[in-house]
Length: 326
Image 1: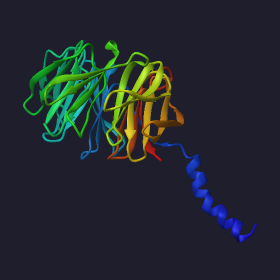
Image 2 (image 1 turned 180 degrees about the vertical axis):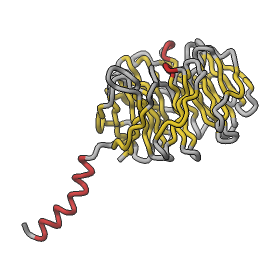
Image 3 (image 1 turned 90 degrees about the vertical axis):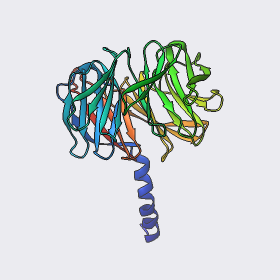
Image 4 (image 1 turned 90 degrees about the horizontal axis):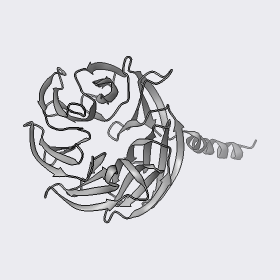
């Protein structure tokens, strides 16, 4: 082989390796011994490098030390924990509990419950509005609660036509987009006026559970189960821009703005990685095999890590899998 041919081959090798590399590279597995049942949502303490995982079926909050890659605490006394929110100032963990209808405020140093807000049946997803310093909680057969987290006070409620699943707060405006699968719609709320301003029907693509935003391109991503599709909506008017087939039983999806990719965890036992070619054009890059029931996940752009909760099922023990996006 000539020197010129060798040079061409050497230059091509990095490209070939990149093409062969999976878009998510598994880095480590963190065992969660003794944890039974399914998982729900996550929250991150970025400064302390702690990950909080709602072990819904186990009635515990699992605390993971990401630097040491091990569980450091299993907080008992939860009641079907679902949504989790971490507030660095003060060091508090908010946990929504679906069974007893409480929002438990936990001390981040001692992991003791400091206060419990009652009368929030089927409490679910939690989000924080950093500008207003207020938390939003989806609960009941159809309501959003506005909570002053530092003062531990319920400030207001907004009625919905069904139980809210995933919802997202836009950063560049006052809206909240809420998946309401029982009503077959996305409800749009003005969080400053505290009122519903639009309803976008989800008739063709139903069971809309996970959600993510791409505010740069004004796109709203919805994961549907009936049928199993990624649906892309225009944030201006709720019109469907496009849709794409995904694996079954999706429960979480995240948009990686840096790489223009979506990570979609599905209980069928796969992570679908979808590339955004343009605001209205998408293709699946890879379908990564995981484990049955592993549909709960979390992506941190700050850590550049993707985490997948794998439940105890059959011969598979409960664990947390950590991936590096390539």
